[in-house]
Length: 483
Image (cartoon, rainbow, N blue to C red; front, side):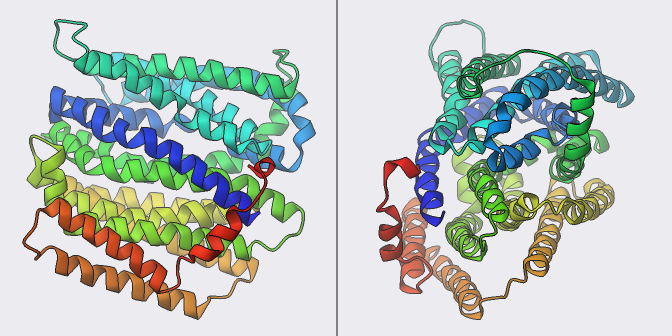
């Protein structure tokens, strides 16, 4: 299973490195620079608002389905038709609830119109994720990796034409960005549907009330977890826009700083998407997960800490490079959010293990605590410190929830801290920080200095035995059938 994890991780990271950096830094960043921080903040706050009630589209079905299909592949024939019909009904519920919430928040007509488009996009994206849960559950990781970047490839093509193709005389509008998302999600959903249909063998739309009720009973803990995590991960930008007189601008500044952290989360999510079906199958078969857990933790921690520290040392330069305005205000926010990503990356591993084990009660307790802390702290911090206050609260929330999940995982599985590995990780972080402190004083361009810092971090990880090249080479000697 370690070999399968490494091989498929290499594939999915390679594909995403080809596509998503250009999407984040080439397209999404350019859109914000073209339309301005305030207009992008208008979109960004509404986008995050659409994510808060997003759980109504799924109610935990995707995670439950991934875990169930991984353990019972033959059940896909029955589950696919029934669950897809149920999800269409949930889409109507989600749309109605989102419009009601928007009305209660006193959104104006322009905000409502954009929110309608964004909720439809969320519905399409939820369908894609459900289709992918079936593909991953069948252990078709290569196919899932390709589907995971398909929507971004199509979106890059559409936005590139609109931004640089000279196909229109009108200046780029934020609404076009949303329309482009709709087109790319429609195409990807159709492709993913066909892939699942080929492997399920049939699709007969029907609504079985008893079956649906049974599925919802089993999946509601997943739904509650997703809702609580969405609240403490996404509500900050909504609160910025609602609580401050210059809320749209503050949300735009926060979005500038949030963009890189959010892009990094895309890659951390790749780990979770691979680990969930692997952990689920191993736990069902009574296999020891400690080896895969340690491998995935170190594999995640080494590049994440090196990248985060580099971003912290060169925060101002990164913001100046990416944005034409408000870079100085975004830089300290960026440093805090990228620090919080280190904690987030650990939740993608330990939270995934607990999800695979069905430890949803414990996860929901942690998430509920994180949500309460985040909202209360933001009510205090945002009016006084704006985007910077929201970033401080985010860092504290992510750190506390990560520590809690790790502690629960160690308790449930009887894991023991490997003192040698922990010492190496701590020493590695300190050494990389020292290297960063040294590189910022070198008389070269900051890009050269940052590159030197990353190279030195890579060499340190090998020299300290955190990354063993020989072990990875052995793991790669495997048949293609295991991919």
